[in-house]
Length: 480
Picture 1 (cartoon, rainbow, N blue to C red):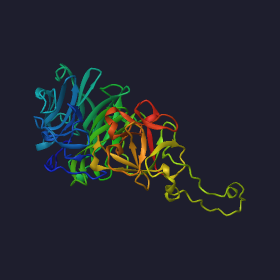
Picture 2 (picture 1 turned 60 degrees about the horizontal axis):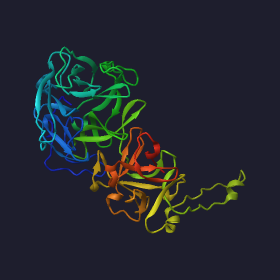
Picture 3 (picture 1 turned 90 degrees about the horizontal axis):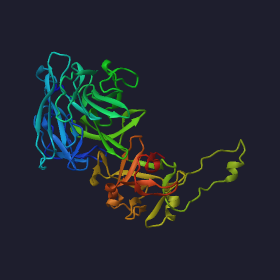
Picture 4 (picture 1 turned 120 degrees about the vertical axis):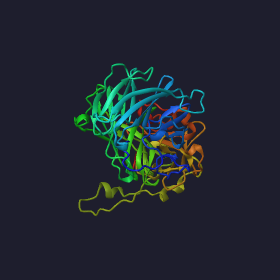
């Protein structure tokens, strides 16, 4: 964020806003330039420009959180040992026509004001710009990897720079000089994965609501100091960058990337949208799936409501209501013995009314079988916003298409379809997109035990511990 060339709206709202069923997140989500979402004392925190912050217990419903001291713009947070380091900028950003700025560091052992470990200690200035040089020292971002702490900073006014800090004190290492690593971006983020350092930054214009063109782009390097290049080999020092996230639906201006690794193959990214068109065009926090394709980060998306085949990545078989197989009538002679000039006409598919009367009235087991486009193999996925959610995704109900028969977890950690959806926790499901684009399906009742829907064979689904190295717990949602 940074160039506040237009008046900005307030960053919080006293009255929490209930999000619509398809929206990201619930509660009070108004923030600009959010820091990477981090956990402290069982709660999740992010901080924004001017010192405001948000807090959540589940990553779905957010509220105004503790205000960090120092004010300024575009903070970032990283945890090292028992300390949370916070970086923020004072001045610069073109505000009052200037680009002179300081990046400052402070630390605390807890982000929660209710904790006895909550107390901020200021370290001091670790980077600065004088308003004339080819840099504007704002928008800091941390990377802690392999025992070393790095900080990127800068905007469109000149270059993005990198300095190294002391992870034990937060101070800049003595004698360390900044390195130029990119241009034509701001709100950078650094991450490391599989031998590559990634530099993500926001391109486009900010602070203009639904007219903002913010989008997130990336380059990578084997060395943290660069050179960073994009997928086409264009250096970020020449304005390159592969697209990661941009506007979608009624959310405009994606910026301020932060990576959240939740383990178990689930990665998310925190960001803000400059304008949520369903929330008065305000700047809002968002949390979305993060995918990796061919070694590059890519924005994922929550599952859209609709009707799907739920396909096991293990076998390719489809999740289905375990009922007697009903044949589709057809004339075998017309199929196998027809002449070249015989008339051709469509064979009707099997409809719900053809078979539903043969299904048991009470709870029915589910199993896996070859997909044959049958009514017992089609599932309607519907968000249940009043049930809350988890890390950027609502809880869903999963029903046999055209019916109220709902997928449910049993106390014995099996799965079945109950006669009708009641809203009970056993009938609510987390559907998290994994880094390869497939999905993990987790019952709300067993989320804390790390159990998920798993195919333990070609035909048997159950609830078991999720193994991120196996296809047994990965599912694909395919439109019929």
